[in-house]
Length: 260
Image (cartoon, rainbow, N blue to C red):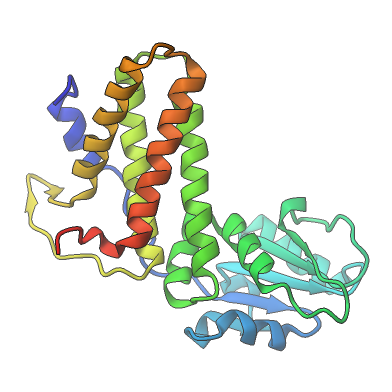
């Protein structure tokens, strides 16, 4: 196995690479025009997963529509959500500026009279929700492209940073396999692919993802060894490229049913 210990492969298969299979709660939209935005986010999907003016304490993501400075009630909601570690997105229809308790990257500007920028809001929900947004994407088609794209891009960035670290090749391989295996499962979950009922041997599910990522990982390591320059930038580029390719495979073939 290219110098990869069998025990390490067993640990990979047993690790917590399983995706979030069910949403932890709905997307709760609060503020002016909350019902309109909720309908747009739920279009073509499960309307029960986007609730206008619902209970933020039950939310998997809170989307707060603002018309300028947050009101006292909105500030209290944002503060409480932050303390619960609930992801928060702000949609600013008034002046552009910082919103307390919301990361600047999760504030979406919406100039009056132009309608809600749904693609940008979906992208902000994907960034804020991370892996937990995958089950929402499976049942809300409006979110699916942004969530899938974010999962793949984030995994590629993490893989590149890891590969560039000054460790030996073997030390890189297993963490990269973990990142890529988790990515395949998350992207399949975001596409709504059913989790197949696979046999289990010695506590290890006979899933295809570890085999796929191991094959790609060994090929990538061989490529790096064949390069005339093997420095950190080269390793990072190969790791990111392999991760992007795996993500594209998972997105195009949900459930990794690769055989016809």
